[in-house]
Amino acid sequence: MLRVTDQTLRVYPKTLRVAEKLRVRVIMLLNRSLMLRIIGQTLRVYPKTLRVAEKLRIRAMMLRNRSLMLRITGQTLRVYPKTLRVAEKLRIRAMMLRNRPLWL
Image (cartoon, rainbow, N blue to C red; front, side):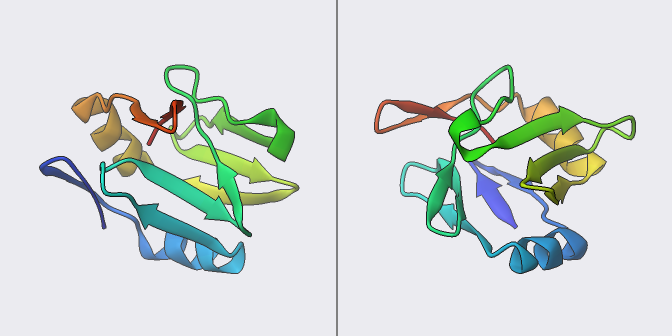
């Protein structure tokens, strides 16, 4: 589970398996910002637009089932609908880390 402020977001087992295959590590920082480390590189998701740094050639898109899919060079890391609904309900604001906005 990823804890944000006093709320909890769930990461489902299937998501963890996919993340393990992609060698994605989720790191909890002291300021409670979250970063996805992909093979040593930083995945930065910007607020509101949910657009990801294009230099990593990663695209975020909303699917019909409300699941967020991050396309990583043809492979996918999926966040399931319930997680998205919780995130929207909490209205998680962007955290500042090294003067760069982060989004969960």
